[in-house]
Length: 55
Picture (cartoon, rainbow, N blue to C red):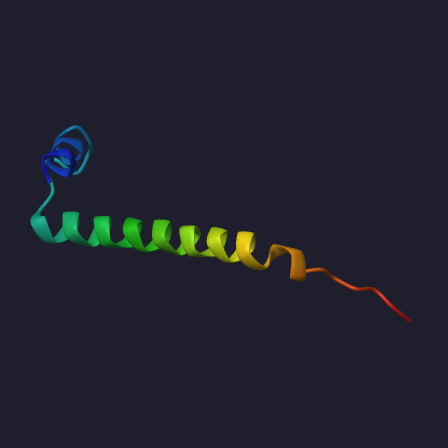
């Protein structure tokens, strides 16, 4: 928790209200977790995700 508080103090979120900090951090964590899940799915099923062209 101290790491998160230090990051907030050193960023532009320092003077913002608590609800704005919470909203910003939740949106950021949602984006990061979505990207991590997509990376895991790509690693797990990447060999099966091929495009087959045919006539």
